[in-house]
Length: 165
Image 1 (cartoon, rainbow, N blue to C red):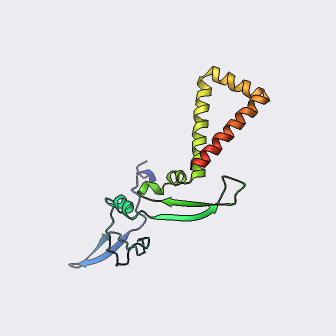
Image 2 (cartoon, rainbow, N blue to C red):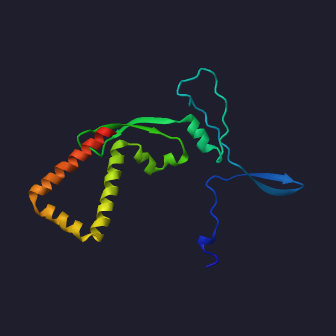
Image 3 (cartoon, helix red, strand yellow):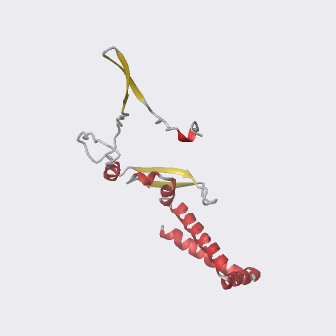
């Protein structure tokens, strides 16, 4: 298994090498990848020319926090069938904010769905462990009047949560 692909060191996605001819010998020198990003990130607050900012893996979050880039867009609303589109405003203050979970938490409708999912997970865990809770829920399901009361209460909670966002 010594020749297994699992033991190989993966190459970086971007490798820039320079062929150097020194003292008659050919030597490959790997160069670091450097990028320059040009753009107006001032939110139209300043008329003076901006100073270049050096960004590295050590100060990336600080620079991002200082610039506080925002993204405002309209996306299809898959959370609510009554509305076709919803406005989304995303703010990025650290690298982790680009993770899909953190982006979802910035969208109120998605945040409600995530909270509901977490509550259902907790309920499922409690149902497995708590016999009395299981019996009470079964009684509610078996009696249509109690089920309607529960549904109404859940809808009211959902509406209250929607108004708080």
